[in-house]
Length: 270
Image (cartoon, rainbow, N blue to C red; front, side):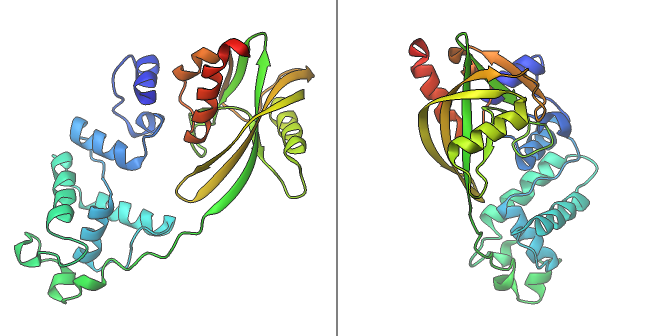
């Protein structure tokens, strides 16, 4: 829904056909972008999912499983090198289907595989050893203070920088709690650094925990008002004052969605 809204607002209702633009859509990563661009627009763009990784690893005896950024990059580059000049969407889908139905994680159907004669794992009888097993991912836990700043019935939101983590999504200002800081001290510091203003911090609206793939965020959310200073946002691509019941029109990170729902529910009382 959020991507559909952004497509309507920023791209005149048409799905963008370039990697740079499509990656700006909320929730669209390199895999989804590759699938759309290659299948819908016949762009020479690879797709890489768990099935494709397994096929590539066995086909070329690649000691890669995508467990880290370096390994993931090698697999993306390898798949890109394999792409034909035309019908890349069909090629990508064929690789995904091969991994899903023939080149299975356990007991693959190698005798039925159309690539069996060039598959190095099959030729050396090493299917069970590729790809190598993944090591457990260490989960980082982050404590964050966030401010819902009100001004005459409007709420301040800002758009994350396009090239950063969760780029292009809107958020409530705030940041990580440093060692030795309280939630309040962190919030005062972050707002001063990000917006150039001092704030009055009111009641705590919620404490919300959200887990991503590699880290878990605990959000401490406070209702605030500007106290002094000139608003001068410095760490975002855009910023706005919006009514609480308009927040659904903007794409937010998953961790912020619960805040938006709370503000929508209580909009008449805020």
